[in-house]
Image 1: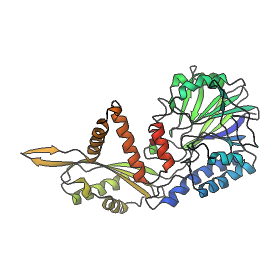
Image 2: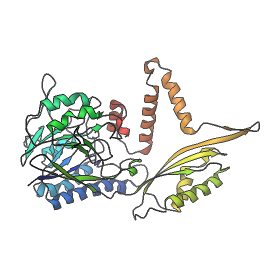
Image 3: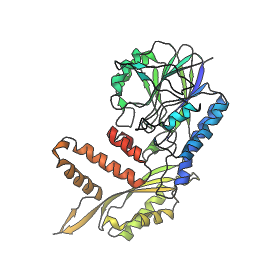
Image 4: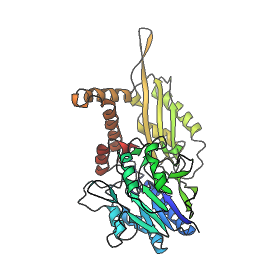
Length: 421
């Protein structure tokens, strides 16, 4: 009989929107999605469950988040189904003198946190998992060897040869929180497809994480060997374009993989553009906005209140600030009641002068220009102005959303912005 398992990743328990008044409902969404995966694992009587990192949204979580996670994982423990996990960049705790919540789950026996040690010359040591200590880099389940490696940053590609050198067994799975370039939407923390190829010779199945878009990577002979299920819920706006789900996998004795992508049903997430081009005043713009939203949101048949991002575009004859968030939300609520609303104002003001129309820069363009000038004034940052401007704006947006912890901001700065993805 083949070994059967579920592979999920980037669950992001604890994610919410603290500043929007919908924190309790959005917080629960991620637990509901994860609980459905666990229920499926028990129903299918799989041999184990793999979590490819970012089980939590931040390294420092609330005690109630930990308690709710244990409640969801309890059926796996009761059914004797091992849950094997690695740490993602969101799980990672920066003060290594403190125990992480992932380590606590492992020590309590709810997960097997796989984390290798390193030799004096920088090689990897995948020691056998010690249940008493709740640590180790390798575990065997029904004749299959599972190796785990969490997030190791932008130099991950250089580590692949060392990972392969440490493997001497057959029927192997690698659980690795990393993305593969050209497939993953994440910008940092990936490896190139050619850097990943050696893994295909050592592992029958490489269980990826990190990017929230599902994809499969083939080896040089066209054999699928690396799988990323993406996130089972919509974590950030932009992900509404991706399928959401997880893999149910069967691994035969000869290493052949059969996989099924099982879709989840996350709360609707919508990104819509309102083209207000030509509106002479805010009242006309609101009517135009309302008409377009009624048309674009008409197809949302889900009973759950959606998460909505509205992008305002066009050249208008009034100051964009006149379209306040409150006025736009009130107009939108006449059509639907969004659980959470974000507004991206890219309107440009058109001013008349000398018989010609002159388009002034949008607010977003002005922000970028001012930041770029400030950063570029320091010679130390020459050559990195665009990169640091994007990072500064990303930090600003995260803080304004109110759904980010200090640890995550620190990680964003340390990794150069990859957590914006």
